[in-house]
Image (tube, rainbow, N blue to C red; front, side):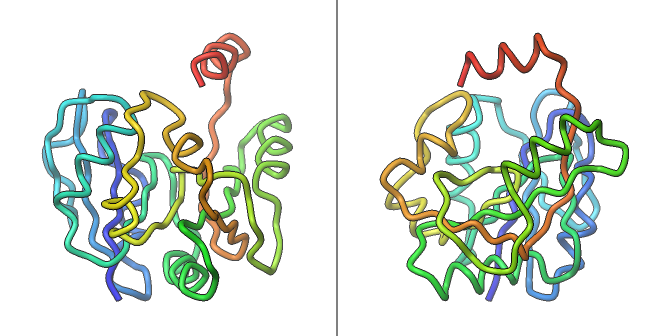
Length: 194
């Protein structure tokens, strides 16, 4: 079983590449470099792309994928444990899911509001449950699913739009560390854009 992890990067080398390469299954890392993104990332295939928004940029990369599964993540997320991606694959195969998404664990220095928001968004647990949408901080799909049902051309929240009418599983046993503070004005503008 092989997975291609796709990471858009516009700020330098993604934080989680090493954790992806250390997984207990074959994970190939594809960095979609744009803006001030990197030219080289050790262990990863770097593809220079124009930024066309979250949905179109990620979907365009699907044509390059040669593995059975695709794992979308972001440049500031790190898999916790060497079984994170395999746990997602196992959950996808065991359930009747179109996609699965992982638990987000805040960074140790995260503010209390961020910690609370992430805990409500992706609570801890020990079983896979249905959820309303994927989250491209850490979401796994069968590659063929994304070929048959492409991400919409949304500049933001393509994961939420794609999830409408789909069966999405939340896998709290697969954990990824990711958080960043959001200033009220930035949060307002992001929410409004979504």
